Length: 411
Image (tube, rainbow, N blue to C red; front, side, top):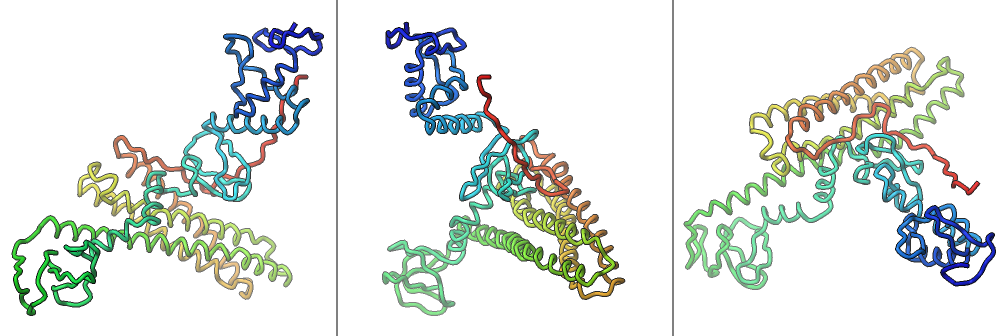
């Protein structure tokens, strides 16, 4: 007898869970359908009173699929989602539109991976691959680039609020008497309201002889911060644009190789070109993201109290020296890769081949040293630092391979 529906059923229509409780298949199925529709999967409990045992997933799938195959597929999807949510080593690919893939890593959570859909991303924060920036640095940088923070800085430097309507006013001439569109005249130097009558040296009924040091310091700092941000943003943008343009070289390189193969050139191996192009992509990406890193590493936002002024200057010089070496060699490699080697004589092609190979090895070594400098000399010396970075991968971001999953059956 089933103690749920109080009906007598044959033994073949009864299912027993691992806890020992057994009920008829109809009651089990209705119980599972309700729980699945509620969004449960791995934590569906036994129906017995005060029994907290979790039901066997294989038995759940078997009973539900016999009644509703579509709901059984929904249960499998819930199982997969709950497995991913509960497992720190598995995360969904953040591609948009979503490719439907989940990535499982074997070792350190702090790494960068490439999904089979082609998207490269940081496994820790699920944003685009941003090493050598830490996740927090990259979050701050993207927010700074997309929100209105720098617009506010510009307005602080170049505008002042009207003392009457409080709208921001930009001074267009050299005179310090400024008139708002509401009709209120005010002094540009101190921001106080004034009359309209004035000369080149004074404004009637107004004197701003008091020096407001705090406001002056605030304006100067805003101006300095704005110029510093523009400097690093321009460098970051320039190398990002170069990376996008160089990505278009891949098709051009293949065309040049095809031309040489059709001309029956004595050169049969053109891996030096493709390897050099891959090295260019990887090193250009490292160089691009090194500028947001430098912006926060040597700025006042994150590590103001972690380094003395002298320590910061020494570390900044050390970092910038390696950064400049990488920049110079990356530009040189970009120049070599872009040469029309398909039109060169064979002796010049051989000369270019050796240049590309040697330069690629040199750039790989510089990137490795740059990462060592960041991990050991810069971030390694910071106490209580939450700014670990993904390790340097000489062969590029590791590509995920498909993993076939087979559901376990009762047999």
